[in-house]
Image (cartoon, rainbow, N blue to C red; front, side):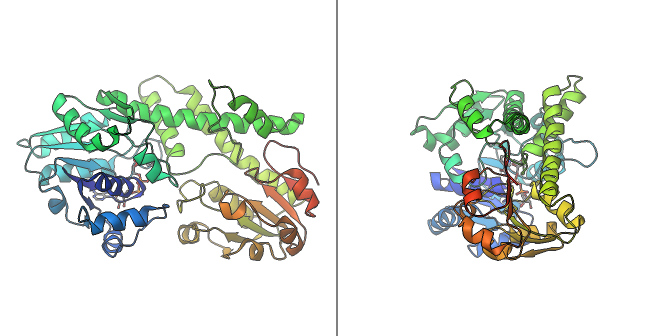
Length: 438
Ligand code: NAD
């Protein structure tokens, strides 16, 4: 089967590479010539563990190619996937569908034979029907179906998630499209994974409901963490005790500096907006959005406390800027709230991140980038652990403390034990949902 993949971002590229690894012929298209040039040279424009090797293997096998030319990609394809961005629309929180609709129109004008147009991007309920209308209007003669196939992969573990999904959700309107989708995913059937086939609207809704639920779970434990600090409980013990209950589960119960990233912030806002438009306010999701903002601001207050009430003149080392480890993605990362607050308050900020510098340089003006956490801590007044990269999980705390002018640490991922920080010579240490010292 030949597949065309529109968009070579975090989702499109991973999906395209993995589909080619299933044995399909995949042509990935992007509008960005820089990305296509890199991909043609065998370079991966994003950081995603394992992606370079899998991409090289399938290019070598002749199943995977990249082009700027949509016509070439679509020619002979039975399915065209739309995997373009759906960022938050300025002003109203709605998902911006400009890229999706533009892609739909381009497909309509290019396709000649029967094709299934599959939306992989996260889109509000009703979008697939809209895609259908746009295509039918632009090319009334085209024989096509639409399908909704939301993606659930996590950046940093994207290949594993794509190859061994908890489930694949496919929304269709008829058997013909369902069969094409089944053919695409058939290689996964060997592993006996559950495929959920639904109507278009349910598939679209599953994605938003799942992301909003996960965002709510994280926010719940983050709020509990704030209370733990006041009452003397330890949120790590609390989440362990909660998570051992199978009805709750232990995932997404790690307290931290507030959720960020390319999906939760925009998808919660979009769901809230969909609710408002249908006069069914998503009150829980709306509260989650508000509380998450407060949590991020609470982090700044924590840092201020460790800096005796003022960042002015302080040297602060920030370890990790990406929204989570194993990605270079900075979209809506907590660092984008915290670092500007430090810089704006007059601190001299040194940042260190194994993959975040490239993206971070443009987004975090006024900071100095170093390639080593100990260099970052040199003569610093405060170390902030912001992303739990492996590189920061086993730091020599004694060495780190010795490098600093005033050894103080804000461990916003609860990586270290309080007693270890004390033993290493830190004079002050704060974390999330646990009592610190100093
Ligand atoms: P991205 O911004 O990384 O990539 C989008 C790509 O599409 C860009 O390279 C852009 O140049 C390209 N593009 C836009 N319009 C185009 C067109 N008309 N023709 C060709 N290329 C075009 O976005 P992403 O993170 O991959 O997300 C894509 C979608 O998947 C979003 O709706 C997102 O919500 C959803 N999603 C993302 C993740 C994630 O972890 N990033 C997970 C699940 C779902």
